[in-house]
Length: 282
Image 1 (cartoon, rainbow, N blue to C red):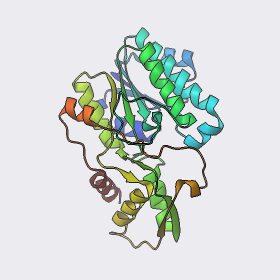
Image 2: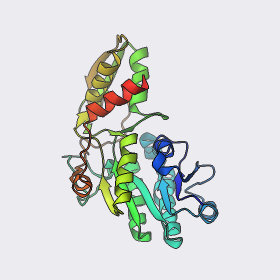
Image 3: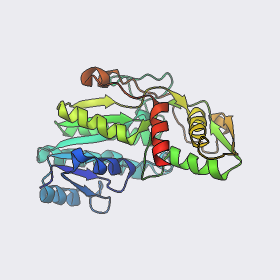
Image 4: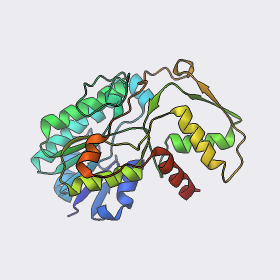
């Protein structure tokens, strides 16, 4: 019997949970062995492992593809999460789940947990459906809404931009969408803190400070260039000029005061966290 079951084991966020000593007593299952769209498979694994807590890092996360194939996104992020929630209630398991700032319309930013939700794309809508299913079907749950996630062991904005900065002479980056970045290691630490406090419900978590994708890229380039020369010219563009026309929020940044008030913890600034991560990585 392992206390924790970590799903989506091959993903970026699950990697950090598996790496953290606090969760050493765990089983980790990938999509092949714990498919959110396969109710019977999930049930059998929960009976076998008997976890006290499920940390669900499994999700359909491709925003562009979700717009083209909403039925797939909803099957995983909506119905699949709902079935997991029902199983957790049946077996008296606490469910930890990760949602997104994309549940908000994203006009003004600084959203608190109780603000009205209104997704502008299918990905956000599918994640919102997952939240609703958890609230409806599970009594003991913790939902963390996170944004612009990055970290080791996975494809993300930081890893992609780092590669492109070294390869390209020019990059065009959107400068009129704003948000908060989130480092996977800090997400794991926030979950540990909330678990120790036996917290339940919905929480917003992201690193302090708001930036655009362009600001984010400039900061990545600045840090990398301290150790190696970069010749890439970074050009700001409007979202309307970007080749992907999937609707995205203008500013869906989330207010994290609830987390800070309940935990008493100061959240690290995004530039500091990014610098520490890239320097350690390099």
